[in-house]
Length: 236
Image (cartoon, rainbow, N blue to C red; front, side):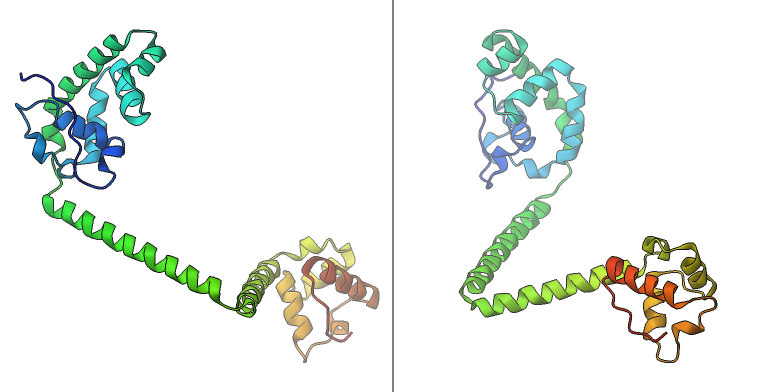
């Protein structure tokens, strides 16, 4: 086996900074015998599959790689975690890298075409981010009146959503007296929305609801204002 070589980063934005991609690149470029370090391309491999093969290592080896490649510790800092020397950590790291090497064939799946598609999509995202930034700059230059109009529209939409939500609530939420509650139920009125629909129907009068007296009607009117912020308009 050839002598270990220093990690050679891939010329892809941020790829060598991301775990476990940085670890995969390190394994790929571990020596000259198996891989040409100048052509290392982690995107030809299934990253999720690579994460699975890490479980073939011992817990100690996995932890060492995690400290170095995910948390960014050096061998001396990792040694402090294990209460061992930096040389011992270095030995464990290289042992783990050698053990991972044979498993790489199981991970090779992604084609060069997929990698090129990734770069294309990355470029599109960058263009989209720049476009959104331009929009925000334009909005900052618009008059306060426009911002006020947008704010009012959003408040109206929120109010409509809240009103619809309240209308679906059962009349139990009004905490009416037993008499008023039973009168509504017998009339087929089960939700706050049913009360509003009945109240707004010009062909209906509340005094037509069986056994519903004026006192109960006033109670319903009061509770609808408190709970649903609705002012009864129908006639008794």
